[in-house]
Every structure is written in structure tokens, then in C-alpha cells.
Length: 335
Ligand SMILES: NC(=O)c1ccc[n+]([C@@H]2O[C@H](COP(=O)([O-])OP(=O)(O)OC[C@H]3O[C@@H](n4cnc5c(N)ncnc54)[C@H](O)[C@@H]3O)[C@@H](O)[C@H]2O)c1
Ligand SMILES: O=P(O)(O)OC[C@H](O)CO
Image (cartoon, rainbow, N blue to C red):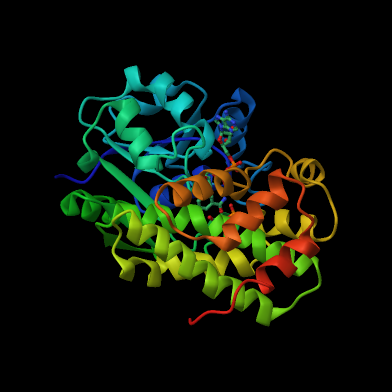
């Protein structure tokens, strides 16, 4: 498989714009689709996308459009950078425009509410492509740090290893170091679940708890994520990697994380509606994925106590204080 000459990125939010910058910095010609024409115009005219990445200058090799057909024209890779719960609908609109042999790359970290499917499964179904043509990028990748050129690593996952290597090369820069992996299930379950655990860590911080609490939630969160992943056929080692523990630590610890920040607001006593309002339209995937992951776990007989209380805090009116007490009061057991 040859290196791509053209790459489309569909979605000009925080991560779509940042990943498009990474691809352009790596030497690719990138066309970024923005839902709003004024965002595309701002990028082309000022090299900025200030509503998502204030202060960041975007490279010349990156151009933007609000026309999806123009974005995907002759692209070898189409990177999907919209929120998980909107991916099906967006992709259905783009599907007739896609070049025949395009590789579809998911950046989204979530599990679909209505079907309990992972994003690569949704993509395969909607675009009618085999799983070998779907890749996933996931890791400790807070957009604002990467847009500022701070170093990080990530995972490029695809069941077709050769394709993963081509994408790895296409997004390799002096500040962005991608590793390959073929365990799509483990990578995607890690990415979706860490958002829910970050909500729990935020709630704990909002309640005034410190690093011991956070570490306990991270570690037990990793245990329940691994249980679910393994039940779905993932390699347990994946959860110790960048997309597993790596992303969990970054998201649970960073004030830049939208999920952690959302949780912190809940912990301080704000309602879900108030926390949503404060997010200014940016997605906190865990708020919806806590429900789909909980259902997926129930379907496979997997116990996920942290995910369960996060769901009940977000959607069933459980207060943060009693939620913490409930987790602490669970029956004693061996690690
Ligand atoms: N921001 C990060 O640091 C980061 C890093 C890694 C992965 N991700 C994941 O990438 C995905 C996209 O995240 P993001 O940070 O770019 O989100 P965002 O909220 O910053 O941007 C979402 C983009 O999707 C577009 N969009 C298209 N259809 C939409 C619809 N129906 N509803 C809402 N938005 C719609 C929006 O216009 C916007 O450009 C998420 O799954 C997120 O978990 C984000
Ligand atoms: O801001 P969040 O919480 O959506 O997290 C962003 C990334 O997924 C971190 O890797």
C-alpha cells in the first residue's frame, strides 16, 4: 500500500483540527471539512480556528471547506472526527461521496447508544467496507497540548497491519509518535471507557477528594474496562498500553479534559444541564457512553461498578456524595 497523497479530515472541532494539523505537519496535503462555513473561511483566511484552538496557527498544507464532496475528493484516507453519537448520521451523508478504496479512520471515543456498537463497527456497517479498511487512532491525546506542539504518543490500530503502518507513517511528526496495534476491540473499548472513569475522577475532585481517590478510581476503572474488553475478545495487554492506561491517566488527571471537567462540575453540585451549558457545545463523550457501556457490560455479564454509578449520577439523579459512599460500601473482595 502506497503512502497517501491526499487525506480528508471530516470534523473541524478540537481534535479534528488538531489531527489535521498533525497530518499536514507530517507532510500530507490535508482537506478539513467544517460543518459551519464561517469556520472553513476562518481557517483558509487566517490560518486559525479560534473557537476550538485559540492562539494556534495552522499550517499552509491544511485547507478547509464546508463541502464534504470537495474534502473527500480523491482522498486515500478519510478521517472521521465527529462525536460518536453523530457518526452514523454524518457518515450516511458522506458515504456516497467516498472514493472507492478509501481507508476510513475513526478518532471518536464512544459506544453508540442505540446499538451498543463500537465506532469501527458503525463505520463498517454504514460505509459498507470490510473491517480491514477501518483504522482507529487513540491514545493520551489532549488536543490543545498537541496543537501547541507538545510531545505525545498514540496508537494507530487496524486489523490490517500494513494499512496501520501506512497511517502511522502519515501521522508521524517530531512531536507526535504513533505506535501500531491490531487489537481494534481493546483500543476502542479503552478509549470509550476512559471518558466515563474521567467523569468519576472529576466528580471525586468536585467533592474535594485528592490524589489517592483519583488513583484508586483510575486503577479500579482500568480493572473494569479490562474485564469488559476481555469479554468482548480484546487482548488484556492492550489495556496496559497508550490507549489504555496512558489515555486513562491523561484524561483523569488533566484540567484540559472535557469529561473530567464535566464531572468536577457535577461533584461541585451543578446539574447535568449546567455542566453541559458550560461546555459551550464541545462534546463530553462519557456522559452518553456511560449508558451504552453499562448496557454492553450487562449484556456480557460484566460488573462495572464505577460506570454504573456514573450513569446513575448523569441520568438517574443519584447525588455525587451517595454515589461515592455506594462505591466505598461495596462488599469487600480480593484485588
Ligand atoms: N479533543 C480532544 O482532545 C480529543 C482527543 C482525542 C479524541 N477525541 C475524540 O474525538 C471526537 C471528536 O472530538 P472533538 O474534540 O473534536 O469534539 P468537538 O466537540 O470539539 O468537535 C466536534 C466536531 O464535530 C462536528 N459535528 C458534526 N456533526 C455534529 C453533530 N451532529 N453534533 C455535534 N457536532 C457535530 C462539530 O461541528 C465539530 O466540528 C470525540 O469522540 C472525542 O472523544 C477528542
Ligand atoms: O477532553 P476529553 O475528556 O474528551 O479527552 C480528550 C482525549 O480523549 C484525551 O486523550
